[in-house]
Amino acid sequence: MTDAKTQIDETVKSSDVVLFMKGTREMPQCGFSSRVAGGLNFMGVDFTDVNVLADDEIRQGIKDYSDWPTIPQLYVKGEFVGGCDIITEMTLSGELDALFADKGVAFSKDAADKIRAANA
Image (cartoon, rainbow, N blue to C red):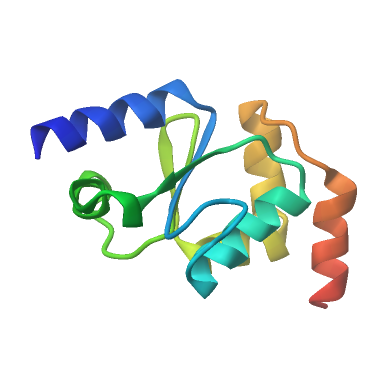
């Protein structure tokens, strides 16, 4: 598991925003991954997607790395933010906007506002 942990650590630290997900940003393979990737795509966030279905060691390794049992998992500037429910709540409350702004991650505030309006 050391190789997977090293690979995960390097990925998390080398990209501003990383989403460990089932599938890819263009073709998510579960509803939860689709929800998070879709939101990030809609908001124009530049993120690295890691398809955990392509590597069983990464799939288990990311759960061990974060001590979080589910996928997807979002990392911003090397810090674990959460899974689908947490990201959804943060998007709807505006906390994700604040996190991105605080960390210097570019995103569309208009798109984030549209997501909130559609879910009001």
